[in-house]
Image (cartoon, rainbow, N blue to C red; front, side, top):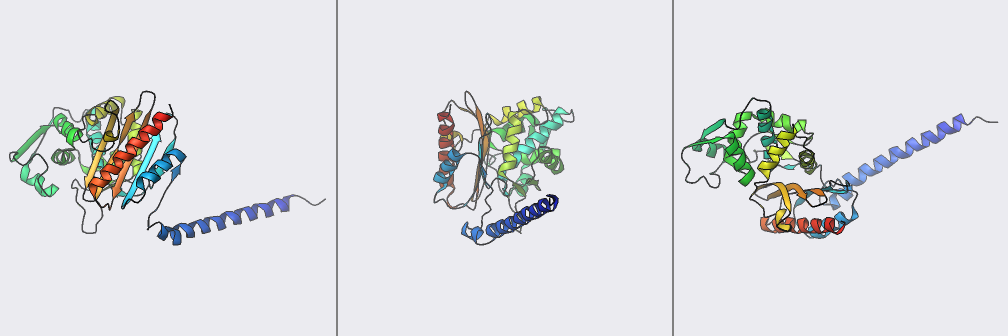
Amino acid sequence: MPSEEPRNYIRLGRFVLFLIILILLSSFIIKGPFKEWLNGSTFNFVFRSSGLSRIIQDDLSGKKGDYAIYIENLSDAENYGLRQSDIFPAASLYKLYLMAAILKEIDKGNLKLEDTVTSSKSRLIEIYGSTDSGYEEAPETISYTLDEALTRIGRVSDNFSSIMLTDKVGLGKIQEMAEELGAENTRIKSPTLIVNDEEEPYMSTSASDISRFFRKLYTKEIVSVSVSDKLTEFLSLNQLNNRIPAGLPGDIKVIHKTGELARIRHDAGIVYLPEKAYIIVLMSQNIEGEDEVVETFVNISKDVYEYFQSKE
């Protein structure tokens, strides 16, 4: 009776060949005509939820620009992702890692909330490129305690406070914090929010990185429980609530951070429901009409909230 061993090797060889052909065909489809048909976009789908998929498809239908979205129910891991690994300019989302880096140094005893940061208004304008909102009548010397600077960032995403805290802790510490939290696509190169001559963002990140940040914040794994609680406290002060919170009832708790530059609008955070919580990350670039994108984000937030509410 013939041995089965040669036949098994033949079957294995055919299976391996089939996998190689499948990989090559997939590569061709994604990089070739199909990618052109998708207008040059790289769509990385994390597609466990058909309900969330329908919401995003409907709300983004006909919208111009590039979008990255990630939504995750923290109770049952139902999720949806659109281009969640793609690199986008971080805008003010980098301040999440800045705040965490400062609080880490405080947790280690290297800094105190009562410590002071001081800079000249002219230097801050030179770095930022213009006068930050609210500083038109500020004196030449600007000084805050770390607690005051963190509060201003949490409340209104204050750019001058962010530059002063970046000077205090150093860009390296902020990048280290991002890497410590598993942010694979995040690069912290400069405290300025403009782009360089090559049109590459000084600050870049992805929806997956930002979602990972908020997941760790939810589980109190950003440095320590005390750091996570303090960071949550600062973010809960946010007064820039025209995106994710605007799509929700007024009594719903939201911890979030916005970001914006010309043709860029972001918002990301955690929405707390009575029996569950979910992460929602909304990012955009190359958009036409910032107000329209903000309205789109409000609609997405509203529809996602209603979807999760209907499942209780």
